[in-house]
Every structure is written in C-alpha cells, then in structure tokens.
Length: 408
Image (cartoon, rainbow, N blue to C red; front, side, top):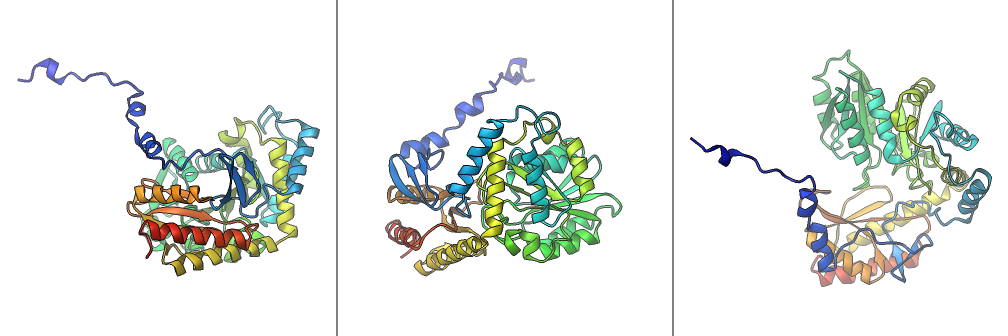
C-alpha cells in the first residue's frame, strides 16, 4: 500500500508558469527578439526606431492616414473642444455628439440601418457574440478567426451557449457541422472577412448559402477588409455583392481609420439590443474624442480619395510578384497582407533580425501562432509606400534570403 506521504501533492505557486517561461528571454539573449520595439517617430512608410530610419513593411496603416495632416488636425481640434476623455461609458455620461455622428456615417457607408461604437476592436466581438448567442444557442466559427472572436466565443460558451469551430474557409465543413444541429435553434456564423495572418478572403457566397439554409445569422469581421476591398472600401460583403445578405459587419479603427476603437453595423433592432445589453459597451469608458475625430476624418478621406485603395492593392500586388520572382514561397491573396513563408521558427527570427539591421521592419509570426513549419515574415503595405520603398524591401529580402539559404 502506498504511504500517504507519497501521494500528497506539493503546493504549486500561481506564478510558477511565469518563472518557467523562458522562450522570450532566450530569443532576446540570441539577439533576435522582434517584439515590443518602440517607435520614436512615425511618418507612415518610414519610422524611426533606435534612432534609425526604417522602412515600415509590417503596419496595418493600410491607407497611410496615421500621419495625414487632416487626421492629426481633426484629433487636435477634438481635444481642444471636448478634452482628452469622456470619463464615462456610452450608457451614462460618455456619449458625445461625435460618437453619434460617426455611428450615423458608418451605417450609411456600410449600407446598414444603424451602427454602434466600442472602445477597442478587440472588445467589439466580446460585445456582440456573448450578448446575442445565449444559453442553448450556437455560434459557429472559422478555426482561423482572430483572437477577439475566439474570446467572444468563449464568453458565450461560458454562459452556456454552444461553440463549434469549422475548418478554415471550408464551407463544406461548415455545412457538415451545422447540418447536425436542430434547425429551429438560433445560430450565428462568424468569420473574418480578410484573415489577418494570411490575407486570404473568406468564401462568403458559399458561407451565406449555408447559413441561410440552416437558420443562421452572419457576422463578418472586416478589420482587414474595410478600405482594402469592396466598392469604395466597404469590405467583404461589398466585394462579393452580398451586402444585404450579411447581417452584421464589425471592424476596427486601428487600421484603415488610423485610430483606436471598434464598431458593428446592422439592423436597428439588433444595434438597439446590443446598446442595452452588451457589458463590453455598458461597462467600458467610451472612445476618446481624439480617436473618434480621427476615425471620422479618415472615413471622409476614404470616401473622397478612393484611389488610395488602388495604390494600396497595386503596391501589394507588386510585392507578391516580386517575392515570387525571387523564389520565395508566398501565400496568394488579393489584399494588403503578403506573408513570406520561412518555415522554421529560429530561421524566421534570424531573417527578421537581418532585415531590421538592414533598415526594413516586418512581423515575425512563429508557432504556436502559426502551424509548425509555417513560420513566416508577415509583410503588409500602405497606399503611401513609394516605389523606392518597395524596391528596397525586395532587394533586402533577396540579399538576406540568399545569405540564409532560404532562396538560391
């Protein structure tokens, strides 16, 4: 018989997982750590890091508006008029006429009845999904959806809703799993419009077909779609001519709209329900005056200067073709995101460091953020990148790729 002391469990400190986490320190010690690099000055396509001018090829500033004088001036004027913050939630003392104006403008832009702002893009999914999908109801989510959607799904599951994931962009798998559910029970199908890691576009026509067949509503996250695809930059539904078929479009201001915050556009009754039931809205301070004014100014520029989208896609297409011509493995898409597959994690970190030292900044994506063997340098482009910037990026990739044996 086993003595009692042999089976007694030793107490484990809550912080043990923190002390055991050494991967970041190991990468730092090797000199390859690519994260949390402070930017000292931001001109859009060029930034200053560690006192050096570096070409930025990793930002989501797709239309290049964060440095636009009109956007800056709008934010400054909003601070002068309203102060730096709202000091309350939208539900109580935190609603400004600016919030209402932006909601009305966005609803009109997306051809929806109404719109609701959230304080961050990440909060938006948490405001929508667990508020709408309740006990005994279903949320069906693409396996590659953004982390904010995953968090919203888990919150719904925690409140006894049912969460089911389907294979990435595989509408046959969506139909396989949804067809097994009771037809009469409410369901929500959620997907990124443009997937943030790969830049690929959801197979929306088939998704709509399946959702309608099995009594499901549709939520599309257009964080990486707005201002990038669709007529006038109206995103994924517009890209496929399915604006009337997509029930809700959510997004963020931190990319095309050069600000901070999130939104959802849909039917008036749905937006009104969210306004009065979503904890992420009711218990969060409202978006700041400067953030809202910057988003408003960016929306006005997008509407007035649609050629920025043409410049953006032309730049991204040039880079896709250029990387392929050099021999790199590139994931195909038609958006601003151009991932270059390196394969192995440490090699990806080394490549990143060589690029950084040579004056080019990109994003290193490694496992578990991507599947094993798919470590990548995720590059993304702006409407304001010039030919000289793009040519320099390609030249630098070529030199380093050959040096590290990624290309021959």
